[in-house]
Length: 512
Ligand code: BES
Ligand code: MN
Ligand code: ZN
Image (cartoon, helix red, strand yellow):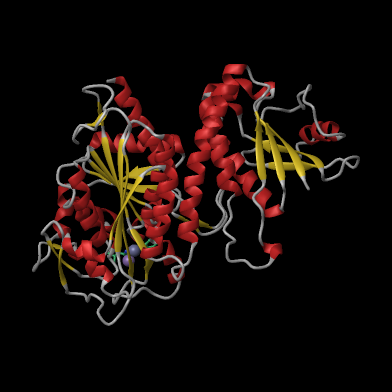
C-alpha cells in the first residue's frame, strides 16, 4: 500500500514553506529540491521524495503549478490530471492532495472554491481512468488510485463551496468515464442494440426518461438516410431518445406540465444530437486498413450525448434537455448502399450518396430533423464527422459551426470554462453551393476542400431556423497517446462542455 501526500507549489516558491505537516524526514529533502532547483514548479512537474526513514509508504510529492500569475482552472486540471494518470500507471494506491495550505490560498480563492473543487475532482478522476476490461492478467489490471483532496484547513464557507463543487465534479467525471468506456469498447461488443441497452440502464439510474426507436419505428418515421447507412449491416439500427424534464416550471414551447410550480415560468429546451456509428469502415467507399481499428470510436458523439444526459439527470438543472442518438454500423454487406444511390430523408429532402464514407451527416440528417419536433430553443450536435476537422484544428480543439452568433458564443465560453475548447469555422452562404446535387436535393460529400465546413453546411439543411451549433469532435474524441490527464484512447469529450452550457442556460432562466 502506497500512500503519498501531494503538495502543489507555484514556481515562485524557492524555499519550502514552513508549517506544513510532512511525512517523516521529507521536509529537508523538499527544501533542498527547491533550493537546488531539482524541482522547478512547471505545470504538471512532479517530484517524488522518499525519506529513508519512512520509505515508500509515507512519501511526499511536490506538484508544479507554474507561475502564480498564470494559475487558472485549466492549469490546475492539467497538473492534477497528469498526476492522477501517472499514479495509476505506477500503481500508487492512494494520494492525498493538500489544497488548503496557506501559500495556495490567494491563488485558488481567485478561481472560486466551488470551481476549484469541481475542477480538481474532475481532473483527478479523468486521470485515474484506464480501460483494461479486456486485460486478463492481474498484473496489467490496475486499480484506479484513490485521490482525496484536503480542504479541511480552509475557512468553513470555502470548505463548503469546495465540497459542493467536488460533488458536482464527481457526477460529471463519472459521465465522462462512461463515454470513454463505451467508445473504447470494440465494435464486436458494442453495436446499436446493446448501446441502447446500456443507455436504458444508465438513463434509469440517472432519472431521465428513455425511449427506443427500433428499425420498424425508423421505417415508420421514413428515416431513409439513417436506414440507408444501416443497410450494409446485419445489425439493426436504432435511435435512443432521452429526456430530462425539470420539475416545476414548464418548458418554453411545451405544454404546461401537471403541477407546474411557478405559473408562467419558462425553462428553455435544449436538444442534443450525437452521431453513434458503432463502427465505420467507410462502406463501399472503403477506408484504408491503416488505423481502421480506431473507427470503433465513431460513436463518441452519441456517447457524449448519453453521458451528458446521465449527468444532467443527476444534477437536475431547470432546463429541459432532450438527447437523441441515432445508432448504426457503417459496414459492407450485400445490400449496402452504393455510391450514386439516392436516399429520401425523413425531412423529405433527397440525398445523393456520393461517398458512402460520409455516413455521419446522413444519420444526423434524420436525427436533427427528429429533434425539431421537441420545438427546442437550441440544437447542439456532436459528431466525429470529418478527418478534415482533425487536419484543420488538431487534437486539442473541437470544430464549431453554427447558424447563430449568440449560441456559438455561449458554446465557446462553455468550452473555455470547462477545458473542452472549441474554435469556430465560418458557415458563409457560399459553402451551400457544395451541398447541391445535380440529381437530388443534396449530395453527401463535396470533396476535400473545406471538408469540416461543407459537412456542417449539409447538416444546416435539417435544423430549419432553430439556433444550432455543430461540434466536430473527430480530433478531440481520441487520444493517440497518453496526453495530460488522458490515457491513450477515448477522451469522452463533449460531456464537460454540455454540462457547463446547461449550467449557463439554467442561470439565465433563473434571472428572468
Ligand atoms: N468517422 C469519419 C471521420 C473521422 C476521420 C473521424 C478520422 C475521426 C478520424 C467520417 O465518417 C468520415 O469518414 N468522413 C469522411 C468524409 C468524406 C468522405 C467527405 C472523411 O473525413 O474523410
Ligand atoms: Mn465515414
Ligand atoms: Zn464516420
